[in-house]
Length: 83
Image (cartoon, rainbow, N blue to C red; front, side):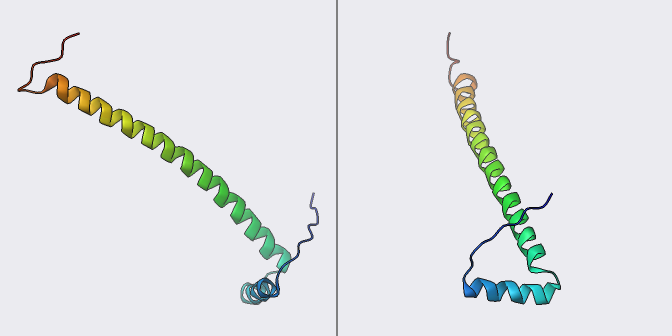
């Protein structure tokens, strides 16, 4: 079911919309629907990227810490840590 949405826009934005409507041979409604859909997709993708980056940082810290500990424990010249 479709719903109507009324928005106010600047003259500059209206000129840009009208230009795209002519170039793409679409209606204003279709252009705005696509723009909103793309914006929602972009926001979801950005949030997912932020979550993934946070996990990557945590994993990197773990890897660096483990690498540091393993070097201390198994260095060929140093004695292994006890206990």
